[in-house]
Length: 112
Length: 113
Image 1: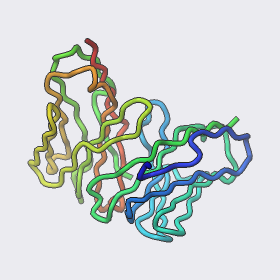
Image 2: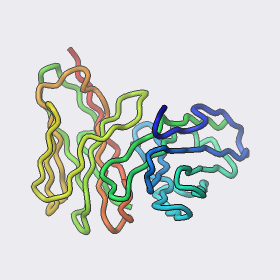
Image 3: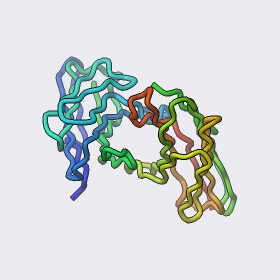
Image 4: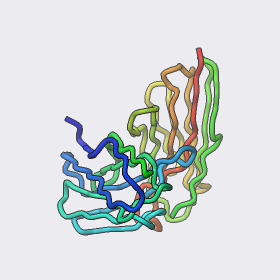
């Protein structure tokens, strides 16, 4: 089983719908991250959390919210999805020392 | 948010060629520099983490150096092979960005036989 699991792996949703992407990890790491990837733009940081209930904005947090209610889970919500949120989303985790981040397999989200 | 620059944006080399990429980042309040390798349809995988000025790391044919005073890191690939084709991402961390991983846009490498 993967150490960092994202669900769903693929999702098509309509403009204006609320959608939640889930991330769970079995590595026991304190730190969790959400990134989105658009062609030519690399990985852009949306939100990150260094502990349960700790939430920090990244470079592109507008239009997104997150929840960290347990160490192993970090969920990303789009309250009202819009087409330019169509992207590949990655969750990642790292330990307190931050020596290495481990990524989930990605969620491909399409907003039509 | 850190200003991270990677160059070149893309690179196409022949099998056996050696190549290198650059990652530039703010030198102030530096904490660590990460390199990741990202193959198409897969998740990014860690290559190196460097923290000290002058650090050099090596993994097989891939090596990296770090200059924290001037704010840059080089990634070298010796004798490129087709399986090296991937996007190479760097991510500096410093106290100004809360020690989060902020990635550059990456260098896309294509190695043809």
